[in-house]
Image (cartoon, rainbow, N blue to C red; front, side, top):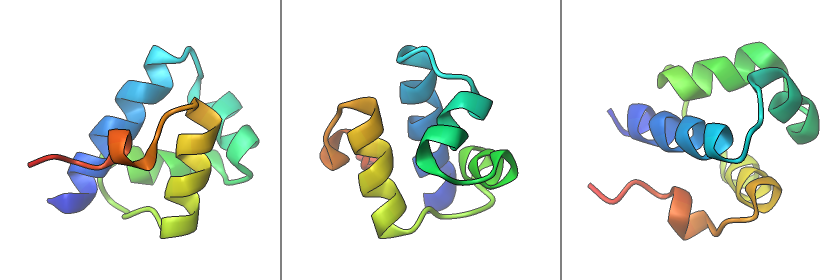
Length: 68
């Protein structure tokens, strides 16, 4: 459940910033399949990846953190 919330927020911000999964995964240095698993909620992103995602999207980690 927690992974799903992270994934939804990451996907929403990625799309808002105009990234495709391919371009965003390349910027993060992870495979498209890993990013897809995270966005679908099948995989919880590691702390260092969360920080990298926030930095790439120019938002804070708090913005990404599920509020529920």
